Length: 305
Ligand code: 3PG
Image (tube, rainbow, N blue to C red):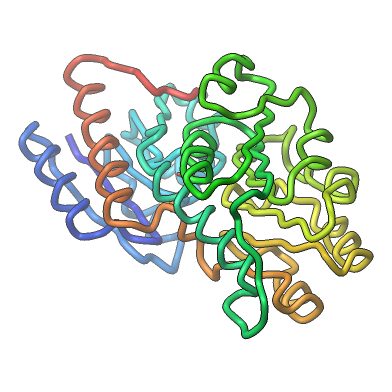
């Protein structure tokens, strides 16, 4: 059985070593394609593999077509919007993610970004504290829950909106459950986004919600750039000199936002939410284990297609 790790943004060495141990102990052969710049290298590398591990790498129909032997693809991470699920399903290929494995890294970054924005992106001048501020968690999944927990340690007053989670499961964590996104945005000084990028959520965060945020509010996006309606973000930030936006991965309008809004805006050049050794190890080893269990025991836990 041949397993390929194809990562434009490579895993930490300890994660690759761990994946190698798990797959080789199972009698499989591990191949590695890292930091590729030409997608043709990806097409070539997948030709004869049975399983594929990726991060945010785009597993398009072309990749699937090139991967003649592929039986399973595991996205080592949470969001699987980079996988063409229809193409996988059409070929009977199982697609999985590794939910929860890199959540703590993302949650820590979200809170770190709040501190960074509260302190004028570390420029001289008087900032503010997170203590006593209202934080809204938009989607109360693995990352959202951890952000809530850390923020409570800072003394923030935490709210959450998630139509797919029971209010009791939110309130038992000492978090205020809200029933509408509008209410979250109109209540909270900080809103931390943890929604996936789907056809429904893409461009769903725009003028309507952002214009409701209180004076001095900050939107924190460690989810996906695609969920933001960027034209509307530009409009509201132009209209309101108090609003701030911080994003883990540069939006399409990065240069304009940077030029127009200075310390009210920051974006990481490359997505770094899950860029910790711990998250790489957790997600990478989980992916390897899931692949071994799939081939040995037909275990399809975490299948997403
Ligand atoms: C995820 O969905 O798990 C995160 O966005 C991490 O993505 P990455 O593996 O590309 O860092």
